[in-house]
Image (cartoon, rainbow, N blue to C red; front, side, top):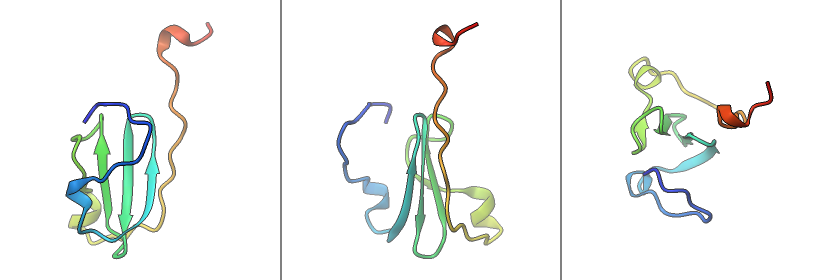
Amino acid sequence: DAVSRESPRLIERLKRAKIKFVSCGHNRSFAIDEENRLYQWGIDFKFLPELHPFFNKNNIGIVEVCSTPALPPPEQLVH
């Protein structure tokens, strides 16, 4: 969902996955399970976690993902 949270909560859709790595950014999050499958969710994707279609379809395992800091809204950028 699009609600800001200040504490962790269970993501029902990942309840059975054995997640070994999580990377959370301002608008998107990623998780990698023990089989190196990449899950994605957030504003750029669906808000519910889903397997990344390209990596899953091509059987490409992911070891790590890093998030970059989010840019402030345009009105806060110095011109």
